[in-house]
Image (cartoon, rainbow, N blue to C red; front, side):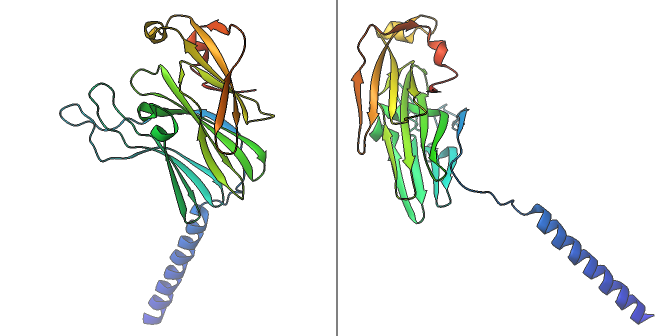
Length: 240
């Protein structure tokens, strides 16, 4: 009788072990082929927690996006929000991890007035299977009237981050054939006119060239265009 019970217990144990192995195999992370992927998406920023006084709880970080560029390179867009007297600062920072090396690019250093900007859009283009360009669109957290744009270029040999001048209720237009040629659209006029969401705006365009170290922009000749700003609300980054 004891031998029968032992055999029964051993069979049950082996069956459970085999089932656990099978379940582990089924629940394992699927393998992915890493490489450049073209995409374009809007981002709704996660808001910071507030204290009893209505101010942002200091000392907290918010990861608004994480991007995998290749097998050794990831990008995180992280906010370090702080309450301000007039405007809150979000201190968005582009953090690149490549192997053991980490590089941080605070938006406030890349764009004048960039401390108030928050991530709202991401678009990526591929030059080949292992290199490409990621465009990031940010807007002012309180008013949404100001935009900042940055790009990340990467290849097996290098990765770099650059930014464009601040724009107002505008966009960037990117050439898919040549992502380093970018049109920067920005509303012009008085502050009251720019802050009027329902008003048509006169848009000036700068033609920007992304170089090795800097982005150089030059005013495009001509009168520009008069448009409603909502034309750009769902596409701060336009790929053509």
